[in-house]
Image 1 (cartoon, rainbow, N blue to C red):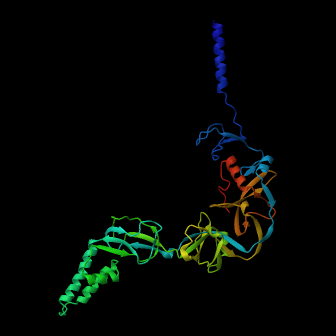
Image 2 (image 1 turned 90 degrees about the vertical axis):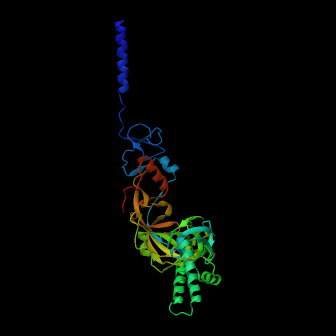
Image 3 (image 1 turned 45 degrees about the horizontal axis):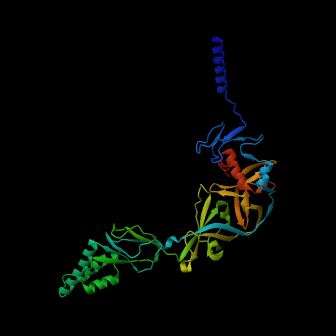
Length: 398
């Protein structure tokens, strides 16, 4: 009996020892998540984000940290195409991505000249068009009503004591009139008030500008303070075309030069314009600048927010260039993939210049003779993030 008990205890101890033995960690294997490739671990487990099992990925021998190696099958399935970059002539046209925006000099804010309660709004919806001089809102204001009575009282006193030269009643009338004009009444309203001698407690205010309503923050019954905004209007008779320019392209721009604005929403309709303004300050984070071209908008058929292209003439020159799809661009800059070995690729940051049709100039970052990925760059970008768990552009600087 003792012998049997001894055998059972021995078996249990051996089993527990086996369970505590850990599999050695393979230094050439890391684990990542197919749903969240930024997760990288060096042992099996679950993704801390989506809780899925991590997928083992085998490191390839000879592959450096900033390189990506693919199999022959991956290259074929991804249709990755490479070519040797050479010097060539790029067309004499610079194409800038742009958008239509409000002409800031034609934005108007209609504000209350006096404190009071808004009794009626004649326009209640954003986007409605307001003609200059049309009734905009009605207001009840005690201060305004008192000023009307002062004006009528000054007129009555002049009529009653016109023969007495001690008091200058014309000056009193003009002072009361100026106050009402300052508080937003029109000459026509004052003339009617003087003729009828009836001061209505409700005053109608008329729009001092014309345009589309872009902001309307008050409702009927709201109280507004003196200087409070009633409505904001935008005149769309002219618009600003604001284009993004990389710092490397600024040398090709000159103020007051003629450009062509192309509108893809209107079958690539072209409008001639003048480069009116180049922002003197470059965004340090994106290395992007803005240029502005005002264009006419008869009929107001163009709307802020529409996309556009700005076409500028530039001297024809010899330089390195690539298909636009070979260059990956974001707010941090531009990069391309170059082939460093048979099936290995590396991401390099480049400085771009002119764009012409389907090609883009490479100013720096590449040399003649480099083997560049022309097709499949975005696939390599995604594969790098999946395998390395990081963006290949992180930490890059020109």
